[in-house]
Image (cartoon, rainbow, N blue to C red; front, side):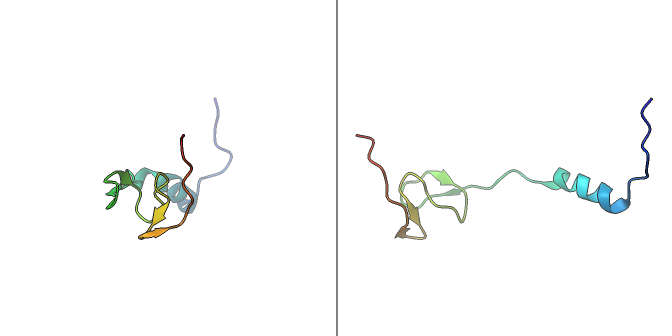
Length: 61
C-alpha cells in the first residue's frame, strides 16, 4: 500500500485546494455587437477594445 513519505504542510495543502474556490468565468455583453465576451479582453470578431480599433479584422470573402 502506498504511504506518503512526508507530511503535507498546511501551506502546500492550501495551495492545492486553492483551485477549489475558482468560480465560473464572467462574461459581459458587448456594446456594439451584443455578443458575450470576457471583461477587459479584445472582441476578436470586431477587433475593438474600449471603443478603439486595436486589431485589423480579416474578411471571410
